[in-house]
Image (cartoon, rainbow, N blue to C red):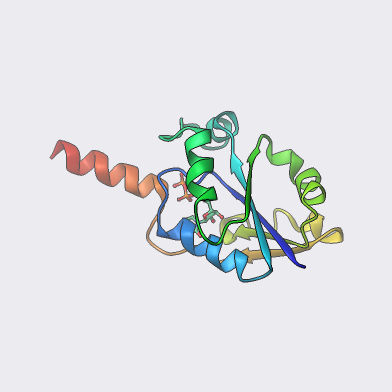
Length: 133
Ligand code: CTP
């Protein structure tokens, strides 16, 4: 049984999120997702998430490719989370390339390419622009 773990905020869920989760799941038999807490997201992105941590967890957990969801409270605790969920593979988007190579002593570390031309930031900016024009 290969367990895959990945992390993210997954605010204003979009197809880039779905695709990385589906590709992550295809690398193993079980996918565990660490969803950034509201506090972690605020410190990471300097912006409050549109949807609360419990709503984001609920949405991600409802996806067919996701087996388990938990709240990620700190970027520094990745090693602990990998061990707690007995993950064999850690997947990150390639915007994080190289950043988690130090965990390769306990799991395989994969950086997958992001889906081009979409992000939560772009969706929010698009809505803000079109709502005021
Ligand atoms: N992701 C992806 N393709 C995209 C956007 C995100 O593969 N176009 C991946 C990220 O690499 C990450 C996961 O989805 O592994 C969660 O990313 P998150 O930061 O929540 O989403 P973004 O859309 O990148 O958010 P933001 O614009 O706020 O940075």
